[in-house]
Length: 284
Image (cartoon, rainbow, N blue to C red; front, side, top):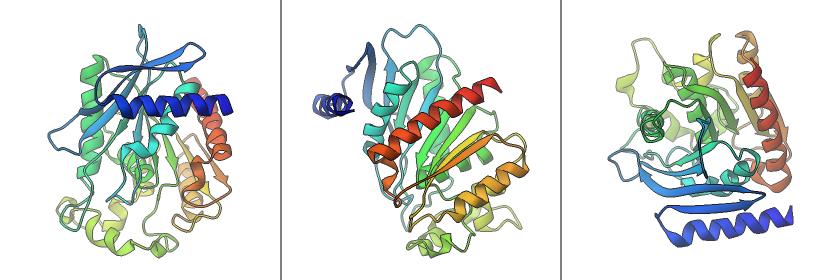
């Protein structure tokens, strides 16, 4: 594991020292990726992605699309770079895209901008790769919420193969989640009221569990047993609705709080479970 950490650390130094040019990341064990940072997938300066493609690619792999957290109004794709490199060790034949999206503020709503950005990133990748891959949406915290909401509500063409939800809120009407320190921002600025249809409440529209049906994407979830931001009740509610609709899913709890999912033991466990989960998805 120490050798892997050294390799990952070296790779991170390489990533941030060379800039936006294409480069090769050598992860050892004959695993290497061609990478390019800060690719524009839209006209806004925040619509950027980092792309990692296996070297000597001669097949059409699935794409992991990483969506960072930050309470919908902060954060950056760089938060998931190290985890992406760890995932590339486990999935050397997959493509990885790590995106920024338009952040919310008191003057800019998160929804629909951020779900539109996921759609735009997917469309950009299809054009860049020149084929239509299956996508695995992987997000933490707000990114987990956006991954689920996009897959369950907005993925009309069923491009999403699976969702990896890490500490993402699934039901924003849950009394446990209403204790979230920034819940006032959620109520006032998470969704543009103009997109709400008549009779649809704000919390129902932006709660991923409200859009789950019998054709929803398989979902793996990971929640902290001592998370003071996203309570374990979110896991229980999500599991229950997925069960009722017969959706293949798995969920796990880890020791620690909201930011502890990527500690070495927790992240290693998660990556193993993602591998096992996706192998089961492929069999279905």
